[in-house]
Amino acid sequence: MTGDDLAAAACALAGTPFRLHGRTEASGLDCVGVLAAALARLGRPAPLPTGYPLRHRNAPDLSALAKSLGLMPAGGGIARGDVLMLRPASCQLHLAIAADPGTVVHAHAGLGKVVIGPLPADWPLIGHWRFSTQ
Image (cartoon, rainbow, N blue to C red; front, side):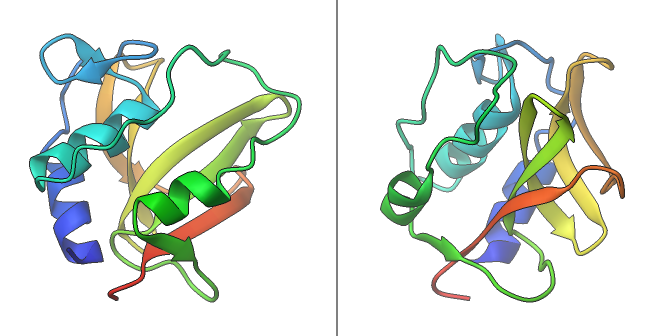
């Protein structure tokens, strides 16, 4: 699997309804659910966490989980298919998948659906992973 594969699978989820802790396209997805559903579309179902709070004071250590998915810490610029952890607010974390270096696929609670849009410049990047096969 490549980053292009993951990006295409994530982009295909655009329009899926938003639901906190959602893990299926039929019932809705949150940001972690977008990653889970994109991986499932590629034949790599992944048991990703559920039941987490909407707000966090500290970022969870995702290194072991990322490694189990075949993701490695990425350096340099953002590439298509990279998995990004962003901080949209002081106590809020958010996962997104890069559709290209300036565009992400993510679950947008305010719009109530999965969207493809510009990477918000005011959301700090606090985690950045890439498939090790890239």
